[in-house]
Length: 308
Image (cartoon, rainbow, N blue to C red; front, top):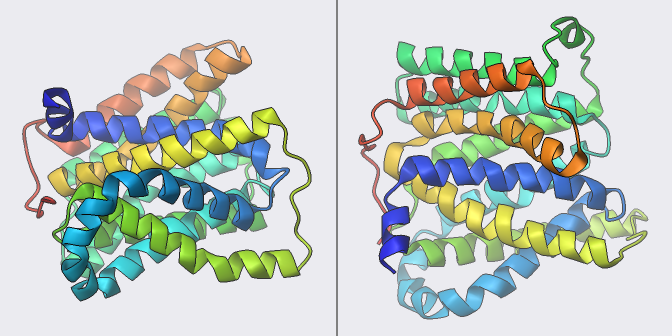
């Protein structure tokens, strides 16, 4: 219990675990999305995640119910952006674009988070934050280009790229709106947002099925992949990310998105046997340096209400 409390108060560790789990989602989920339609995969993912978390959240949900009712508007907005829309757009984009393009587009998240935070709450983007974002993005480009800048010149946007960019913009809105997080326990917030998000997803899933989308094939590996995406990038990643944003704010949390391609490359090296190169080391140094340059002092905290 003491260790969990210590972890709860470590925003930089929480925000580092989040992209690690998301990178695993990209590696594991990419294989599954070829067999399961995007909305159906998202529906299964969040419905299963809700069933797994509800036994732990039930007593707190009952206690927080009056507050939840008073804040149903912002809860709906957070569920719609962070659960229903973003993940469906992400899975759909993976059917139409390359992992390299997705990695490039994910690097726009910190800029979009900062822009939306400025538009909604007048949060300033400091030169330090902009510099950190630029340094981290340079590291991302070093990794995805393999150290060959000519490869970046050949990138072109297609329908999958546009879809992913829309999804990232939606998730940036979710990140900025987290400031209005209702004063309920983290487990209550997680349960209500993923449960409500799964409900809001039903019409999309039904429409997808009506248009002829079907599950093509699902073996033991597919079930294991579904279990992973329901637990790690869903329950654990969202608990870590939500808490991290509340502790240090969305602008300073945004650069941690740059860890996704870094961890993705590392997982590919470990599990797919890819040979690491100098560009991986250089990219890692730039990404980590940019994150801490934008984040400021590890002991600093944002003026955001922490959940009870």
